[in-house]
Image 1 (cartoon, rainbow, N blue to C red):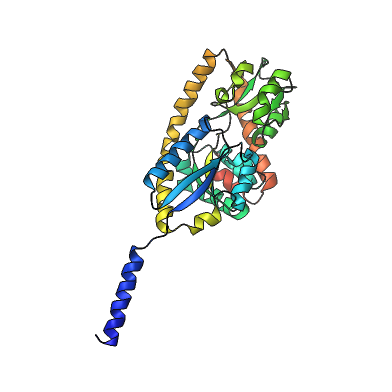
Image 2 (cartoon, rainbow, N blue to C red):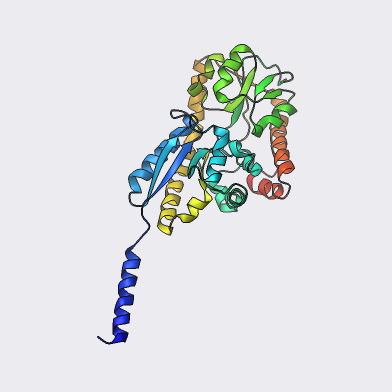
Length: 323
């Protein structure tokens, strides 16, 4: 064998071995901001089971805890710092890191359209730049928030009402004349019982998970906003994955997002369950509905504008309805 032939043979062998090699299976440490048996944790559990079943040799997700291990409002920091690699959470909880994340809750277009029109790419880029996070998936789409109360609301008058709130709708509640109060989810039941709050904002599903139906008499219609729960990854971890691992996760994301269409049926079932539990649906007078919804979105977008004037116009164009 000549020296030239020998070099060619060695090169071919290296190429063959290299082409058949891939990174070892990676284990992603994950946390959920929601309790194990709650509605907003169910899709995450199913996703983890599917990834671990089909991703052998590529990717494994190890769930290291829930809100008992990392407080929900600290999950974003944990992802940013790499304490965990992956989280089932909501941008509402890390809005102090990425104020623009609230746009997910103001979205009036489904995630499929946001992926097509560049909205997802823009908000993902902002998350990478400001929070060292990748916005991997949206796993709730079309669910609304509602105002729940243990006092009857007359003719859409919320003045003086003390409502448990979170940043995404605090300004909206203030615009209605209500007093927003920040109360951790674990303390809401007692706050209702003791009269610290008269009600609370919460999605159209999930109050039975927390036992709040026992202290809730009314649900205000219509709802507002678009409840956003998503999967977020540490950007450094994402970059370390090889092409096959990223492609595998993207395939699983497409699968899990395809189940967002089930949310509306879940909301209908929950409202029927609330009715059976004697929670009364209280409609705002028809002539006030348009103003109620307009006030909600104006307050939400104004909050983003104050925190991020450079991005708000484009986000509103891509995520909003054009109103």
